Image 1 (cartoon, rainbow, N blue to C red):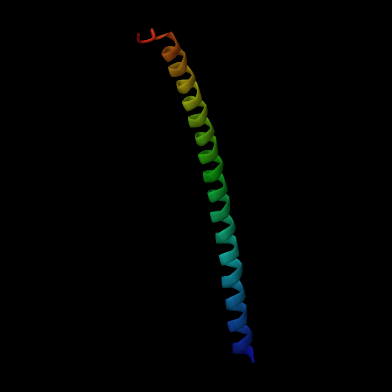
Image 2 (cartoon, rainbow, N blue to C red; image 1 turned 90 degrees about the vertical axis):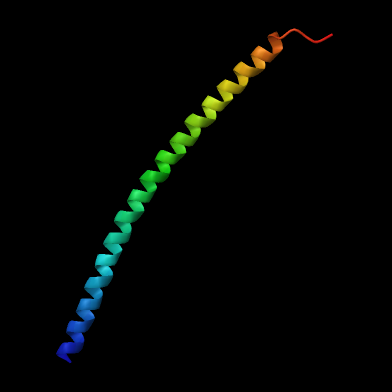
Length: 65
């Protein structure tokens, strides 16, 4: 009976350690996702500004006859 309790206790400790590890990994992934989302937004804004500049330059080009 005592060895069964010890085995159960060891399994519970492993499960608790795994939960802590997964929570830490989840936090890292959340931070990485937030950084990637911020980068995506920045790139989207840069692309929009570049497109608007190009459209402005195209509008200034003389039309072909």
